[in-house]
Image (tube, rainbow, N blue to C red; front, side, top):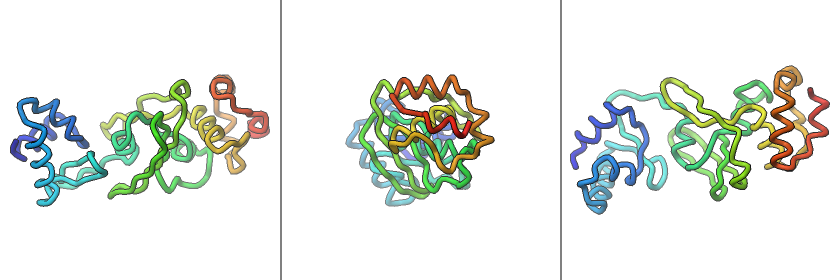
Length: 196
């Protein structure tokens, strides 16, 4: 496989981040060993960037601005962006999240690359819900509903309230959705209602 073929495919299909498995689906006539060798050579020649072992991005001639939340979804799957990242995005907590925080059904992990820091926390499969498809700059991102982000945060940190929560932002949340997710995940949210 030639790099020009990969570049053309990436530009035409807008695939920004990929794995060798993705490439094998796109170019099924290629042998996996040959594909892995090509990927290694492209990393050495800086034609692609390794975001983590097995996940890559093309080094375009011009800089591509890819949302870090999209990168988070692609680095570790299945996952959706949640907790501090979503709480900050909706003004529920005042500070800007220092890393993109996500929820996954896989093992807890942390990654760091050119886009920043990414952390993933584990929940049971039955708790892996309450997310939607967010579109940002043409990228599709799996992101928690704000109410689910609150409950994910409380559940994973063993809390009943978010002490630094903005009361006005908290009052805009759906009490029904909060209760639904709290009941599902067996989270005591008695202390949370002081902020609503």
